[in-house]
Image: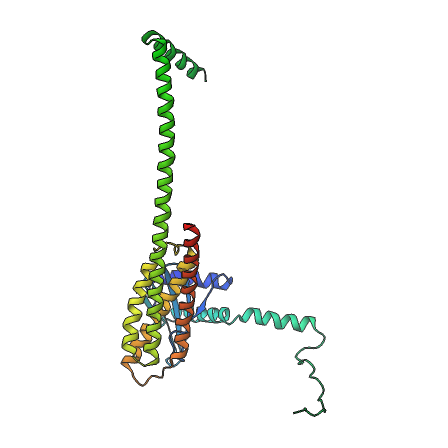
Length: 132
Length: 176
């Protein structure tokens, strides 16, 4: 469950993320492959969210400047909370993986080039024998 | 302006009425000497104040450099503990490192927002590392490889090292 004041913060993050105004970072420190883990780092606090793909749940925490957990929350018990965290996770993942930029590059390539998807021509086989 | 003129005129009249000509000249001479001495004292005080400020700044920077070195050493200890699967040691060291990084926030040369954000990232990574260690200690069957975590710690150490070099360079510049 997400406390009311935290939901306001997450909703704010969602709105700013939709405008691509949030720098999400992926955390690799957890080291457990079934955790997708993203965060927003402020000067003296952090908002972390994650998806446990094994359990099919979402959760998160807010840390203070010492790295102490000041609030924990999860998606259990509320469809609305689950949807909010799911959307945030999706936007965070897109940001970290530069999905929008990649899709835009593909779109640009499709519009601009007469031929797409081809690899550069390889050099013809050199029949000369290697001198050693 | 008119008021100042009137004040000087009145003062002159009072001095004529209450002092002899030589007395006035001596008074003016004494005033001039006192003025020069005061000006010299003031510039000396300003120079001393500036020197004290530069010294305090240099000492502050040296403190920061020493604290950064201590954090880097701590990060290396955590890396070694992880390589040796000594998760409890890594957990405890990560805890003290978070405290050290928190103290570093207020040190000379660290106050800028960009560095505060980087410290918060390090603190967050260490918190997550602690959580991971706690899970590993609770469930020893969980798979764990140190490489990814140690890369995060190495990046943090490299960044802190760069700050330290920058501070060392700045402090030399300030003392020259």
